[in-house]
Image (cartoon, rainbow, N blue to C red; front, side, top):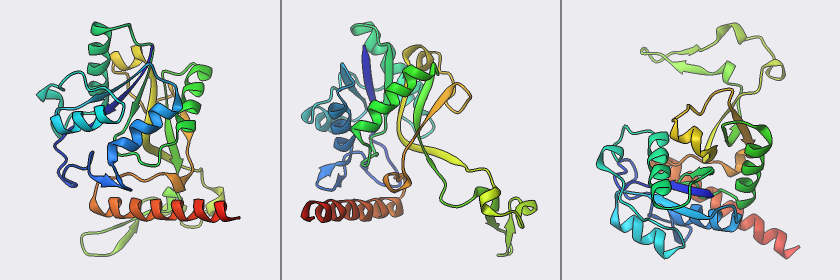
Length: 236
């Protein structure tokens, strides 16, 4: 079986209740649930939460929330992999064994069903343990600077000062949308960022991590821009 797991705990600190806070007219988590449903990749879509209200919202929009996430997996320090492994173990004990599992973040409003489908194809074709969404940095990270304690600037890699941007290796980062993996890789809690993971490139204009109020505001502007762009194309 192919299953989606959406981790969504209730204790967000920087943006209270962010997993179900309204975004574009919908509770934030609903964007992820709808993309999972539209992809038609999954036999089950499970939300792993410790919060009754989040569970209710998830169920009202087509996902399942069949268990309460344990307290020890619901604090600020628990990583994604143990949460997904717990959900898989619960699923396997209460239904048909999972084979391919996709973790979808609850705060990924720009996730596309077609990208989820492409991610599963890459997982299958690559033979990797994982396949997850990545996007490129807009600026060469080799030319990054830091602000020092005395309010001056310092290059992180000063040896790259005279290197042309086009001669630097392009860098990518986790897009924070979805993570396909074999059930066994998740259950063994294998690390994600290794040679055993394959990239699923996503364009930068559809990627926004949402951890702070500033991130949220930027995401709202991105959504408005996307809606306007769709209107313009519809009018042509």
